[in-house]
Each structure stands twice: as C-alpha cells, then as structure tokens.
Image 1 (cartoon, rainbow, N blue to C red):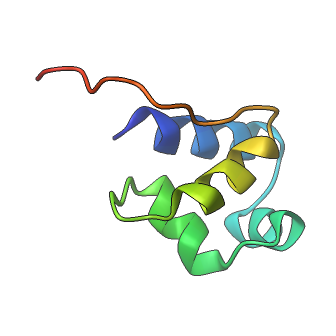
Image 2: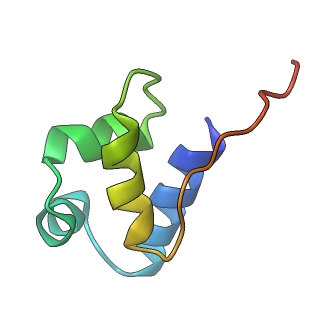
Image 3: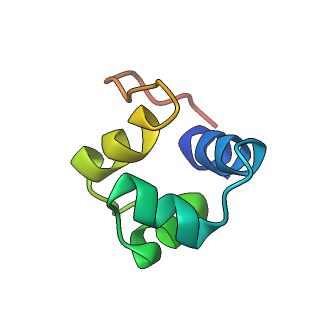
Length: 67
C-alpha cells in the first residue's frame, strides 16, 4: 500500500470516521475515498490534498523510491 493511502486510512480510523462519514465531511465522493485508501494510482492530486487537509497534511512533489 502506498504511504498516502496508509496515512489517510489510519487517520480516518483514528478519528473514528467511516469512509462514508469522511467522504461527507471532506466533500469528496465515497468512490474516491475508497480508491484513495486502496492505493489507486490514478486519483486526482487536488482531491488527494482535500483528503489530506482533513488531517493537517498536504502532498508535495518528491522522488519515487526505487524498489
């Protein structure tokens, strides 16, 4: 799982929110939240940042680690 997916899922659960509640509070669609938490690589970065802002975080450019 990618780090953003892990962060959002863990933070959402720590906040005691279901995916549905998180989607409603953030203004994002439930399908997007599910895709994000599953690590789908084709999600929109502007929406990723909306999700991250709910937990005081933001995505920034960086180099991909080699596997």
